[in-house]
Image 1 (cartoon, rainbow, N blue to C red):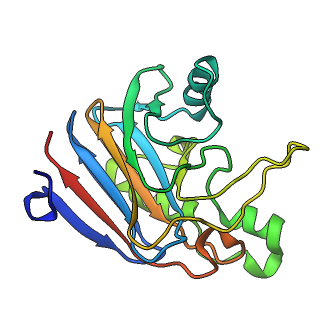
Image 2 (image 1 turned 90 degrees about the vertical axis):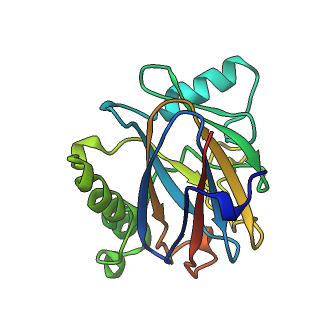
Image 3 (image 1 turned 90 degrees about the horizontal axis):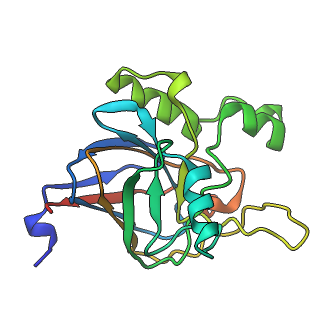
Length: 209
């Protein structure tokens, strides 16, 4: 029986902070939105070859060919740039997660919300700090998943960021399909409603295969 007491890792990630871990094949990561409406940006790399990394394009193309959706939920397989399965979403209380809108950055904050936001902390900075621990730099930043982020596409094709719909204790659970480096940014954004304008902590739990 899977419970927090038999977890390999159980860690709270503060609001606005970064986190990373390596999953062995078959291990499960549960990301928990403790207080609700908290976006969690995620990057994925082959832990043994960082040149293989998550591809939103390959993932969504495979879903489209299967008649699937533009967002991610239970059953979605996250594919690499080599079209290999990296992780599978095996449980999800939210119902959809974005992989189109990308990660916030100081540059995008400036363009979207004004020069006064330029020096606000952003997910891109979290990612750069965390991937540096593994010998990577800005050239290794690629498309990401935004767990718990509500990004509807309007009938006119406009992509928007709306209020998050995850509830306190809501979670998404992923099973690693390869030896997988997971890098998370507990999104610090306060200029749009993806975090309810109030970034909050999350919890990450890893179980054995």
